[in-house]
Length: 499
Image (cartoon, rainbow, N blue to C red; front, side, top):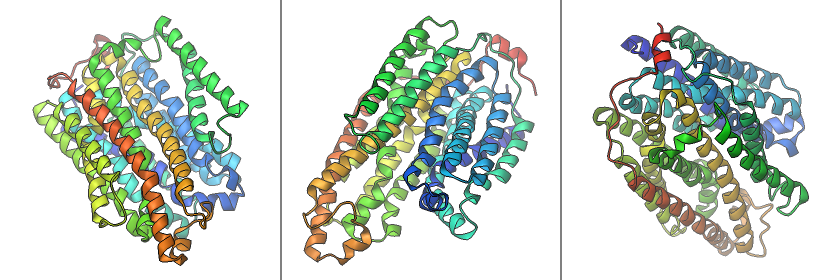
């Protein structure tokens, strides 16, 4: 359906606002974790503020993708946004960590819907070539949220209380809801509409839940050899196998396995995992790494990940506008993965003897490289997928990136902690070491701590550079094709679209 420029701008504003709310919810909460846990008396359950949202979002995303394909996206998007807003309000009223975790699950389900459906609604109304530009604009919400989220969370928590980090979603969300009601076109049932794949959804939910819990609890709440963790892993493996068996036989599968016969879809999925594993997994550890190695303030250390995020923002927008003009996209994943690999390889050589601007510049290169293809992977898979499976293929890319980030973050944290403990001098206790304590230690000991941090992170950076190198090889296999500049719909959708 071709929308008027004014209506398209209004729709884009609504989708961008909703995407920003969803992205901020991941970052704004971080600054208030300690405060919330202290007030609600649940320090040992603090991680559930993050885990509950991530888990619910990951499980719900493929469900929303397929439901949108089968029954239309407008009503589903509006419902998801309403669920997200209700969940946000409930979070602010909770009285203990158990209630908060439950409300975060509710909020995460709604957040998954609005995040995924924002990307597929654009695909319904914009030709593949032009999607690159609009997906780049919508995707800008994530790097913006990384920059302003922690600061906004801290300011809100310190000024009016932590409950407002959730309640602030209400007025902005209601504005987005009003814009969405007025501007999202209605769609009818897809030509492939049928019974929803409940067995597939249940099995994928079990497998995803098991995977997230295994990597979140492994080595912390549960030892790697504990019977409980081994049971979780076994259930995850068995449910994953059963899922693929069911999907191969389902009439209307949750994830149509046929989409992976396309070389482009497979490569784009690999590139999505590169983003989650290669960059998202390490960004959260960078401030502590820089702060301890350079003995600097938290504010200064925070500039390093900010450099990567700003780089990501620039190339995400730039690549989108260039592809919208030419239709050619292959060069961006190739150059982007090469830049990411080079930047992380350079980070593996960093010591406290080099100036701070060097790691900042290297991470900016990683961000520039990642941004060049981060949003394009969605456009690429949508461009080669039938309209009846847009939601399924878009959710597949997003879920792979999210699971890759979750798993890799846990692995990076575990490896980093283990190597750090081994490298610290015997006079320093890793459990009590803080930046303030570091400044009170003798200069020689401070240098040893800096070397320990450098030695702990160096092989991690090198391993993540190898991940980008794999992405580079995959990107070279992309075909020399152009995105279409025509919007096509299935016959049923063409009849059902209305203003």
